Length: 110
Image 1: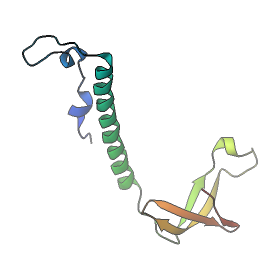
Image 2 (image 1 turned 60 degrees about the vertical axis):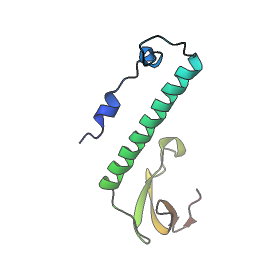
Image 3 (image 1 turned 90 degrees about the vertical axis):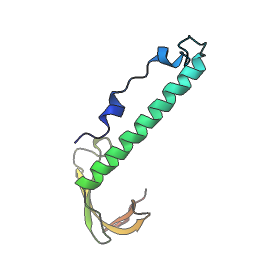
């Protein structure tokens, strides 16, 4: 289930950047090289984010208002006697990805 592996396996050769079409070496500043590598890194991260989002939407179903969800509490935010998670209810969905959650004691703050 690998998509776009040819993009991931491509390596940018710094020597290829500094060559002109007639195969002569051109003077390329360090800033220009950094810009080219930065562009490639940004494109790679965007592609990875798309894959992660696609995998997540296949793995998890869409939530609806009134549905119960379990929220894990990070270890750093709880003591030994606190529960590891809390049960909440979805009370509102904004922009199809932001959920307003509530418990018996009230709404959760962001």
